[in-house]
Image 1 (cartoon, rainbow, N blue to C red):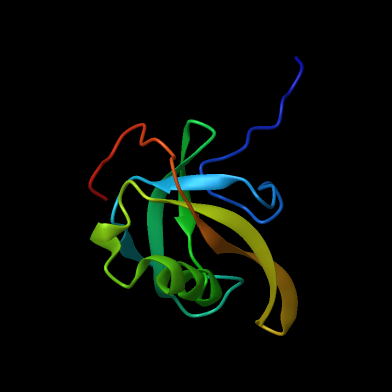
Image 2: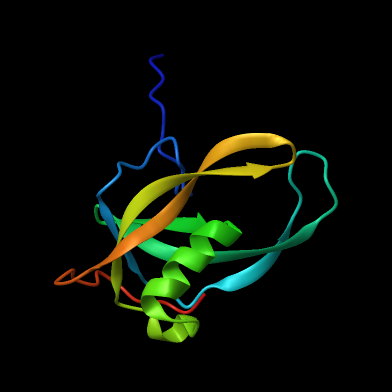
Length: 117
């Protein structure tokens, strides 16, 4: 049997292309998550579409700040808006890694579907 790798349902710094855009399709929610054996903490997640596929963006603080700087801090007003993606270096848990950020608002994008999250 031949196996094919799947993209998964989450946006990932390893799989996005700098300069492509996403459309927000929900206002997001806060979920409790644990990372690398650390104590659980609240994490903001929001549904987006990328190339017509629905994905979840589990935002870092840096990613959140980048979107807030562009679209404001009321996530219900993000629904239907699009942003161009980029990457930034961040340090967390003693390691430096790439995180997804929004670099500009993308005008003219079309909403495929909008849902409550």
